[in-house]
Length: 536
Image (cartoon, rainbow, N blue to C red; front, side):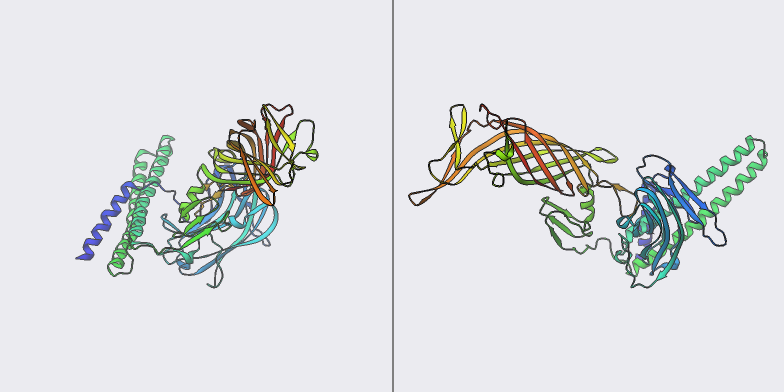
């Protein structure tokens, strides 16, 4: 009785799934190379050189558009029955010319169209630029749940590649997988997920056969309109192909229904775990700054102290870091000084190595174009601390509307002048981080702060505080004196800034367009040079 109830639930579930199933791209099973990809129309793909007694067939993929946001691939697809539970190695020779983005061999093992069990496209060791014939390989483990197996060679962006001698072989399980999704790490698929996948497969079988029938009927109608066959003959042909397609649906659906029945039996026999079994937590990883190993695992938590973010699993991290607008914690420090009208830094009144600036704040980074990662608008709020240490035992004295730098009558152990500003920086950022594909190769992600970056812009803000700190000895007593006031310092600041670097670290320069003091006879403009860290 339990088996009958469970079987009924699954059948109802499969029909409900059909009603809401999204249209999925079908991969035709073929022993011939097929042209596919996200932008197949942007490439010429096919046989480049026919085989001779001494040469093998050479295939090519060549871009025909000047700019391509996607990839083209020549691929094959089949059932993985011969490889279940085994490790397979794909090898091939590839030659490249002016590959601007990347290219590589790829192989993917699926459970229907529902789940990618193992996958590798060589993106982490991609073919770039111009190279002579080189042998490459991809190694994957094929889990027992696998239902579909696809492989090929792809070109992302512009350029041209040639490939030949693509071979598959079963190797020892001791051979390491190259995949970014490793088959040996594949988790068992739940009963509900398997039932849903089979239901989707039944839906797709019906849709494919109906679409094929529609095209064949349209072709027959064309023959009638052109006078090539009679209406009676056309009706006979339509009846035959309709019966053929109906038989195909019946045969293929029967196979899937048998799988569904077996799935129910396995569930009744306790061979499949319940879907509400809670996954084991994978622990917590604490990271300071950038993390070279970007993957954290499905059930692990990453606490990134540099960016002050907590990621709950790899999916959460990928999605948040790939948003069009991301946030960063910014920290910068370095040398600080002033440029005095008519003087150079060598004649500065302030110690070059003793005067420093600090800055920290929060910025937002917005990709300007939806499908291009080069231009970004970077904006936020920062606290800037500009410290100056005068030379020759001097300090600042407010004298009416003027602020003078005078010599102290006592020996100063320290003389430091600090201005603190709340500013709003704004930069146009050029980020050369390349786009990335999702692990199943079907989705494009745009990441930031992983390559060369250049920011050009400026800032504006208000002065929050001015303080002078003096340290000296009087009568063998150490004195630390803090003087607070405006010292005639400009209430507002604005200037130009730029940074150039790689990843999260940059060389950073700032220059105040406004003079430091409001009414002094000689203008002095603050300038800073240092390092900047954008923790993404």
